Length: 137
Image 1: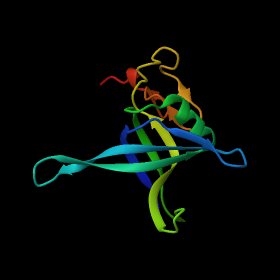
Image 2: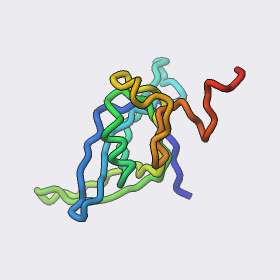
Image 3: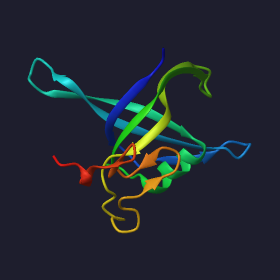
């Protein structure tokens, strides 16, 4: 089974590109804090490359910015490529099946607040159809 769930903050704005066939692909890096501290008592952070495809890629590129908190569910992918100077490289990345926005966009708090965005992407006020403001606790 290859299944990964991450919660973290974007380290940069998503980069949106299109394949030669016109399929959207977005890349961004996620800073994910480790649950434990190191020997100096400091919390360490992992920086993980995320890849989103198609409509989800476009939504991430349009609505996410550096610093936004998101949850990503997907699978780990290890791929190899060769640089222009002939060196072989390997890269690990998470291919996102689902991206959920966990905080509000500070720049756009009115236009999208409280609404779900298609393709499993939302602004965090709604969790599987349950509005968190309606909960008694």
